[in-house]
Length: 109
Image (cartoon, rainbow, N blue to C red; front, side, top):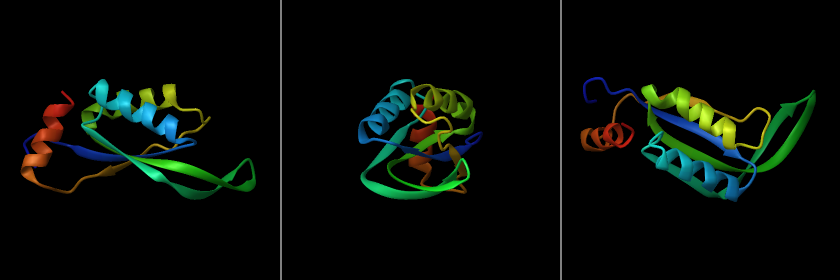
């Protein structure tokens, strides 16, 4: 991984395809993410909310960013997201293609 690089993958689920695309567009346009995959096939989510087991159809975002941009990215997701408590899970990247990681780093400066 390039020196100083701290690549992260962030998972966010959205209540609609339009919301997912809006968040993805904003994240890339504002250089908070190098790339966002919008999984347009719905995922079925089961979760506990207010002491009940709920089920929802959601759309998954797979966001590639750096540790330095996480705080601003989380704030932007919260601003644009319709949920009271949007999913924002950060996964560390142990390695990857040197060229891709370099591009990722340069894309979020």
